[in-house]
Image (cartoon, rainbow, N blue to C red; front, side):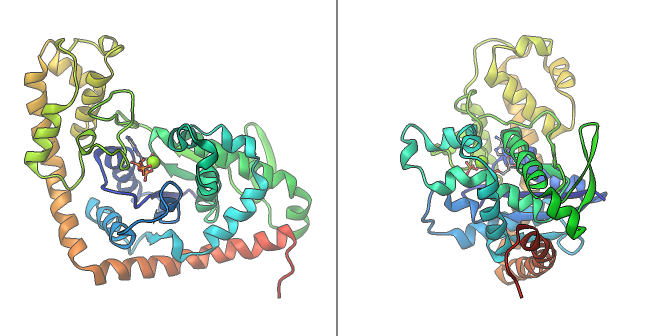
Length: 351
Ligand code: ATP
Ligand code: MG
């Protein structure tokens, strides 16, 4: 049965990219899948160790999940650090994965910057913890933005190597299941997880720079639309968004060398549930002075209800904490089941 896992780091204000690329998809998947949605607090200390407000940030991401419509009774919502098995499996995966694999990750290169020797070891090992998050539940599908595609590929590489390195023990212990590796059927322990990256807004770009993705950790607040921005702020940010002086083209091909225009069209398409083609056809030949106000109206209409629901939920920290505690208990039961078998496969002496 397909099982969905995904997570968001409590590293700052949630933005439109997080919503369109991830959270909105989490909500859409919950009718047909069993889902586990995590606030990955252990990931959030990889780039910056000390956070003044990790707890409130964690509650805020949780409130956004719930405000967007995730049902914590039917699915599992929790914060990662409660389920210590994530760290335990990540350690084993640190010994499965190769340093060379980690060095090739573009997120590491971007976040470590020039002074790579001085980046935390955790930032380098980030994808190993992410593989553990996913494979602890043997999740088969992971809805993410385009920036996480490489990490999901690495998760498959880790699963493949674990299955291969321990193939005899997995078979002897009878812990294997039949898995498809391309055309080939193999017996393995961890599934090969599929990323789910579809739609017109899989990579929402910064409003200030069409070559950078919109990020929570970008120092410029003008670069992103936060889920909690009020109508005036959304309007100001979209009106200030970098664009070029040309009118909008009549076909998608005309957006090729125009990353900022392309980004705004993608955002409009995603928010209005239309295709990019349909949006371009609608605004063909129009100036940004016409298009931007239409985008402001649309963004405010779609985001305002989520923001007010988020505020309402967040005010009740007792409720939010209870959701995370309950979710953590349910997650731990699954995680411990997996780890019991993993410890046996690796050969650790246990009671
Ligand atoms: P940080 O800058 O701290 O890494 P972030 O904005 O990248 O923050 P994450 O918590 O790392 O947010 O990612 C949460 C989810 O949001 C992931 O699935 C990621 O792929 C998705 N996501 C992040 N930024 C974008 C974006 N600009 N467009 C689409 N999806 C995005
Ligand atoms: Mg990120």
